[in-house]
Structures are given as C-alpha cells and as structure tokens.
Image (cartoon, rainbow, N blue to C red; front, side, top):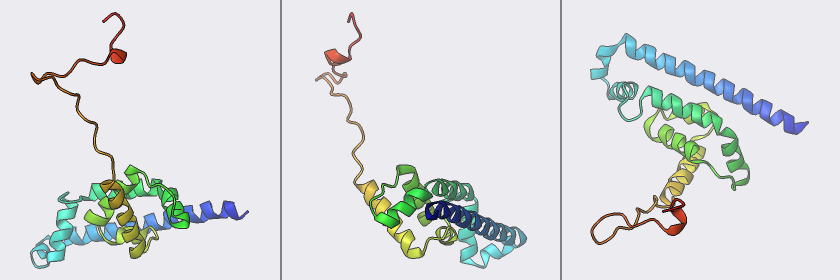
Length: 158
C-alpha cells in the first residue's frame, strides 16, 4: 500500500511545483511588460530581461529544462535515496541549464533545496568531466588520405 502512495504523492508534489513555477514566471513576465523603463534603473531587471530574450538561458530554454527535469524526477529521487542511481545525460543537461542560466528558485519550486541542487550540479559536473572522449578519427596514410577499412568492414566482393 505504501509503494502506491509514494508515486501519487510525488506526482501531486510535482504538479503543485509546476503550478507555483508557472505563477511566479507569469508574475515576472507581467512586471517586465508593465515597466520596461525600469530596466535601466535596476540591474536585476536587466538580468531578467536578458534571460527572457534568450541571452544566456532564455525563457524557452529554462522551461524546456524544467520539463526535462520533471521527466527524470524518478532518477533524482532514487539518487538521493540510495546514492547509487545514474543520472542520464539529458537529466544532467537540464540540471546544469537550470542551475547556471535560469532563476535560482526553479529547483526549489520542484521541491529541491538549494543544497540538493548543489549536490545534483556537482554530480553532473563530475560526470561531464569524466565522460569518455569522442570517437577517434580514422587513421590516415602518410599522404593524409583515410586509411583503407579493415577487411571485416568491407562490403562483400571488394
């Protein structure tokens, strides 16, 4: 019975968090639209305007990252419960986008504390640093042309 209660509670918490985030974003958008001349007087207004216009993490990027993060919430919950879960590339990309380029309160609107956000970002940064190098290019001949493919990769009859 308890195992059925956890997903329902988690889903309810995510729905409430999404609603809170939507309301706060709407409030921010309304304030920017109502007072464009105030942007020159307040530096924080300039930062908000830059985010809304897509400079360094635009509104669309932030909301896409938030939606991606919602899709990997199970991974994150397991990560904090047992510490052994693997957070996928898309999940880490969303975490980095939100923590580096979006509003600081976006993670907290999903129910994560600032400390948990730092832990997630640290894990994802470490994973990115430990990622395997990209595929090596094909070896070249002394003339600079690509070397012939090995016999196993050649088409029959060649």
